[in-house]
Image 1 (tube, helix red, strand yellow):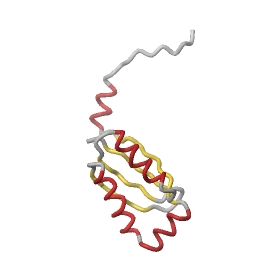
Image 2 (image 1 turned 90 degrees about the vertical axis):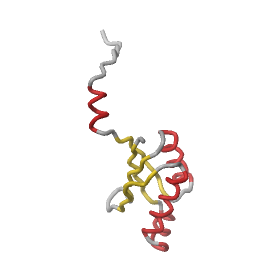
Image 3 (image 1 turned 135 degrees about the vertical axis):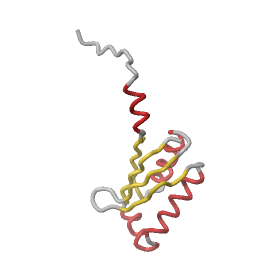
Length: 106
């Protein structure tokens, strides 16, 4: 199953929700959303700095990752960035592929 890194930055309303309900409640809500998409939450961590949450999830496909991102961002409490994660074996396979690309430059 493809893996994704979900990076979230809370808006003011989202930060207030964390302060009111706690971090475990946010992790639980996120985990339930992942399960609804037939995925699995691998890790969920809060962070200090520009981003507030880093989560690694297994999801069936990129459409499920997009649905998760849209659902969270659409709620208005956080902005989300999703990154596709590749295993070393997938990078090995990619390194063996050599598609022809014409840059258009003479």
